[in-house]
Image (cartoon, rainbow, N blue to C red; front, side, top):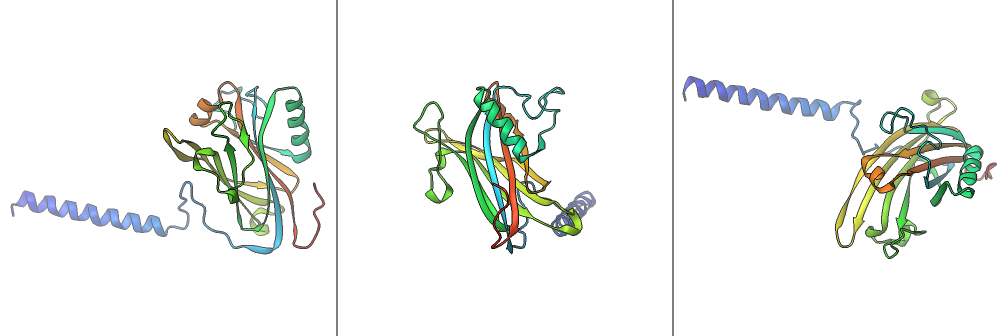
Length: 234
């Protein structure tokens, strides 16, 4: 082996060892976060959390969240009182400025993951949504968005707030064209019972699909209460 080849071989060996070491350190690093993946949380079966999810569109892109700084330089979410959100959305719907696509509710123990889906009717050219739950095993071609929500509580870290972890996939699938799904929201936010977190869905995919209006997803933490205690909120 020539001196040049020997040197190149040593350099390659060092590079491979360094890459393997970096990968091992990365995998073992407790601060490493994988986009689109949330670690499982311990389940607290003594507490129920009621969560509502509302998918809706608005004709005015500045509703709830202003786009004064531009669509990609504006805030992507805001927090409102649940009663105020319900009243504002009802008024917008009454005036023809908003359209509710679907509402779903789930009651789960703290730490459990709830799945919410917005299903589209694949046989309706107008895009009318069908109220089909996951347990009904809808065709994958009917899905427009898939969302998972997990509610936890750590009073030492978050005080009086509950931590809401959210993963939401944009889904574009048709029987004739096939399709794909991709995570476009990966969030960890703090809420109190009786608050609503409104997300504006303005990924490139949703902007193209939404046209001149805007698509939103609102997550309301209706209540969090010990098992066996009636909810004080609607």
